[in-house]
Image (cartoon, rainbow, N blue to C red):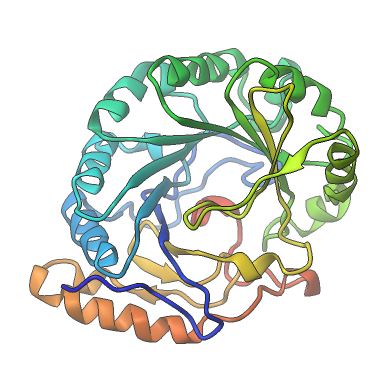
Length: 328
């Protein structure tokens, strides 16, 4: 399979694949699964062998970074095996993981040994009672211990994801600034996104991050240049701080112009946009190696259907009922 580079009709290139390995999640975050995860179909998620073939095919199409998401990916008992087969795939340079962090102190060393190179941990509040109210679990200190372990294990990129919510955690910028003063962490404030199940919550809690961005700009924080495989965050640094602050603002103008990632569901469906209406089955190509080139051709063709922008600003969130469906 010859190496190529996926490109859509808007000249956007795609070196970054987000791969969901499960839809299950053990947290009950207010903005995602406030009533907890409800199993609606058999857990026939992609096997390790299917993931090996999938990633091999996408590496042949120019994918260089794979991020493992969920639901909560650490619920997979074979996650270390999944990490290993991806890290061993020729062409893959970065294997990243997004997690709620509840299992890091027990399993992160195994993930690191398997080839994990980058880590994002969800921390929606640094205040224990508030963290519990948001997630349904009193585990903030345990999650923070996992982040500290990640730094001890030598991860070069440890990021904290914080979903910004009006009246919930919109007063916590000073606490996060204190956290990164002497530590090489990158905090990413994520603008709350409307999904099919969260219209009422979104209307109550959505907050535009633009004022926070403006505040940092006036306080001598400088925006950093994006690399080809970076996510969508606008990242800011300050000479007095070891860490950085980033913002993912999907409702901002031209947000989709920098799109560089594709998404695969836990059952092998290609979703061209987080908030698109369609999902395209790729699993039927994954059982045998001699069908992978056919899958590559299929992916390249489907990329021609990718829209220029999402329709979030028009109140349309596509097939995504909640972010645990495909990892945000």
